[in-house]
Structure formats: structure tokens, C-alpha cells
Image 1 (cartoon, rainbow, N blue to C red):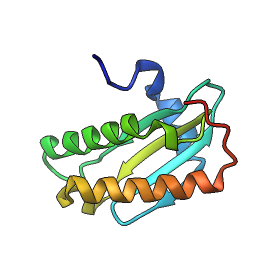
Image 2: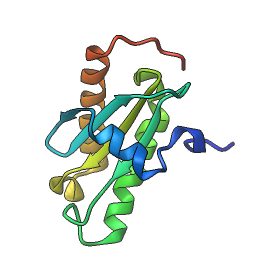
Image 3: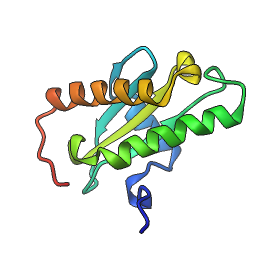
Image 4: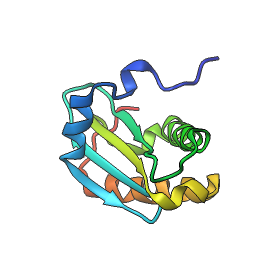
Length: 121
């Protein structure tokens, strides 16, 4: 059974990322989550891990996998018709999976409480 994020649930274009990055944000110690309204039926997700987070591509890709897994498991927490971008901050490269998961959960719950949601998942 394929449990990946669907292609329609991911941000791909630079213009989509830029729209979201110009929207609202909620920052933590390890992660910043940006969000903006979109015309799509379901939430879409994007992930940014720059070289300031870690020089090693292996570590940056591991963080992206953590973010993708978090979004896949917790789709029901995200308000519908929104685009989200998860950006790793420099301390995230050395953080454990649990630390990243807990911070992402805290930020998403904070965002969900700010947005009047009509959840469709």
C-alpha cells in the first residue's frame, strides 16, 4: 500500500513556494512553518532545508523525509485549502526525530487554532 504524499499534495513550482513564503508564518526553535490560502481542494506541502541547516545532503534529505512523514501522518490536523511550507532552521540538523515531530505538531496546532477551518480529510 502506497502511503506517500500524492503529487497533488506537494508544492512543486517556484511561484507556489514564493506565494506561501509571502504569507503568514509561525516559528519555533527548529522549524518555521509558512502558510497561505490556495485555490486547491486539499492542503499542499513544501519543504525547505538549506545548507545552513547542514552541509551534508544526507542530513538535509533526512529532515525532508521527517517533514513529509509528519505531513502524511497528520493530514487531519491541517486546515483545508491551504499551502504549507516547512523550513528547517540551523539547529534542526542535529535534532532527533522526536524533537522535530513535537515541534512541528505544536506549530501546526497553533496554526490550526488561528485559522477558521473547514477540514475535509
